[in-house]
Length: 405
Image (tube, rainbow, N blue to C red; front, top):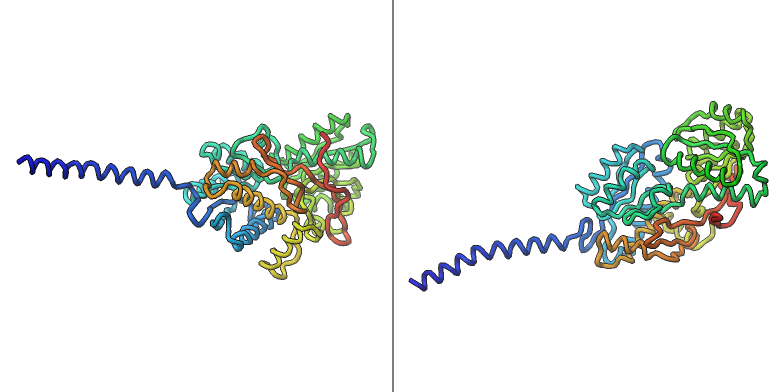
């Protein structure tokens, strides 16, 4: 009887304990899993405008990202893992950007994100990434998103405020125009990024003792800027600082020529590109601007490599603009952070990987890159450019420089 009870007791104990061990084993297995990371792959998401108003910027940018990741995967990946990137189109729409975020995070389960197509879209996504501790490469130039530093939010881009400072530095120092003689107006689209540039122009003008003559609004997709040009002509500025994109900048320049408006148009990052010159034609003669990235034809180790890899994967494709270079650079930063994070990869080690990027020499892709726990902006150096209508390119008129503090 005791033997039967003893056997029954052990059997009953097994029935109770075995599921407990099985549960613990399952929990342990889940605890070891990291979203978006397997032994062989790293999954990340990219959100940008591929078919909307700024697709002419984002399509080459996305191609630069894709090409660089392909190159890295062909070299063996990162610590034995290949990069799998999933690209979503938000069409410069905040609801679509949020839908893309939810798909990438909850269905595709990516480790990290590069997003989104505009400042307002990024502003909507940042708190969601912070809530779930998702490292975000925020594709925006607005300084307020990064100062003070947010632990999970980085940018691959220069600040519009720095570029506006450089324009004022160039006019006052290089061109030696007296502040009391400087006649400046401002033009911007009524979106978050445009307002950031507008506010930076206001701040710099006030700090330099310059009276800003007027401000006009030009939509992102403006096909006609005649009314804005006529408003500017009434105050006769010598210089107009414009938050331009390719399409609206080209429209502004063409209408300025048509209406006899001779002022120099200074644009920031996304308007100061080769496609603007090609689209505007001879009307680009009065265009200058600021850009933080190298040019396709330049003879530097970084740009030579970019050209060689690009033409290997896309033979006969021709030259690429700085938006392509920007995508390549953003992918470079992610790869460098992944390398620094090591084989034990998760969201926290990836953040640490970004913050270890110090003195990173891109060899001509852009200036030296520094991140750190108190600095999540990589770019301080830029160049001033002017349009060359003969070659249909932008050409630098200064070396690499950063704003005077």
